[in-house]
Image (tube, rainbow, N blue to C red):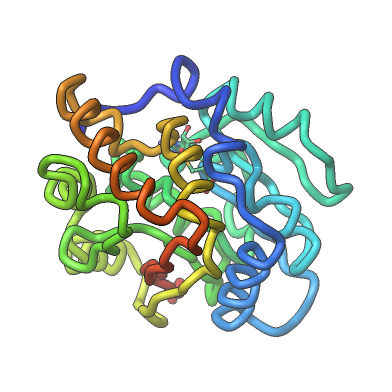
Length: 252
Ligand SMILES: C[S@@+](CC[C@H](N)C(=O)[O-])C[C@H]1O[C@@H](n2cnc3c(N)ncnc32)[C@H](O)[C@@H]1O
């Protein structure tokens, strides 16, 4: 994978390109609630919190949250957004979490795992900061359980290129179980439609997905040309939904 430096790319457009509606956000919060302990408050970590897409909603639903994010620019965007009194953002990474041992009831990694460079170290570090019985919510893609968003097929080698960004599921599970995690559940979550095909095309043009960083200029041009032709046939119809994997691990 060509690594993405969020300090030099994506940070300006990420919040717009990857915005979630209130209904979409609620579907995720409900999915997390279903696999978290019932007591409140829970102390949470949003690891790779980015522009804070989830952090305030996590605080509202479960209790105080620390967003940990290595990119200064992404953190700046998060901090400039509406604040929640139970949210703080800190510099750090999954490999180096700036919080005490056993201080979190859960950690969420929402599409940040594939960016983590030293994964075995991150799996150990997450086991250090989450208390025994705590949960790790891993919203990741897996090369062998990869979602098929409708637009990907329009890009040359789109599906293969996108799936190659991710590890197979068994490899991720082996990495975590080696350091004390066990699988609590594995399933998928389907967000409500993000809007029309036309809306989605506008967002995709902002290229706030690691996938676009893997393509050459010719592939990008060919893909967007094909996508525009496809969308032009029905721009106002609701964009199709697709199922997104969520792996939940529990610390023994
Ligand atoms: C696709 S964004 C996801 C952001 C946020 N979780 C969301 O869903 O909007 C990936 C984020 O992971 C962060 N990241 C990169 N390397 C990381 C690491 N080693 N540990 C934690 N986060 C990392 C990036 O800076 C970026 O903000």
